[in-house]
Length: 266
Image (cartoon, rainbow, N blue to C red):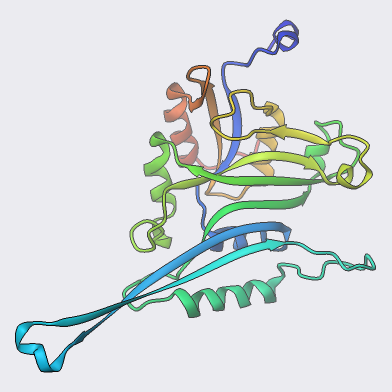
């Protein structure tokens, strides 16, 4: 984009948004572990018990009772008052305990996959020099916040395929959603208040003026997000009210998923 375009606030033809083509809580816990500092996720299962009323069995009278079990995670990392560390880290032991509880509450005999929770939002804290190099940041620690949005039509089948082994849609009843990056903030600035330290910001598809520097988006996709779920989504303005996935780039996106990662300079 030219300096003149920047001066009048014009948007480039497309804007790259890093995304995860899943909203599986298990996948995110496996990928990021104790890097997760905020997590909202939920899941539920309904079981049905049927009992024949003996005295009226000849008339086919059946009593049916449904029981709904719901689990919600609303996690925010807490620090000890004396500054000695984190009081509730998502370490290996806590992640194992969460997994066991999810299995205990939501597992049913008819499912052939492990029960899971659908992530609504997630923030991870990463230390990455390659992000510092291309931003005005004074440190290498950043908070990346993701929010679940409905998967675009052109990516629905890809999202299904990537999550097929988890049975998210066929057995667990998940909606087809992707975790799209909403913000990148240098952690240090949260405490020093020297600046807002926000180097990427987007409020979702209804926000037609995202701030997502391409080099930053590429490095996050290449060096922070896990395969096979990582993807750079190119969005373009469909009109004055919404961004849409750029139609002419969908085949390129599919090719990227199929091809082995080459790493590259960025």
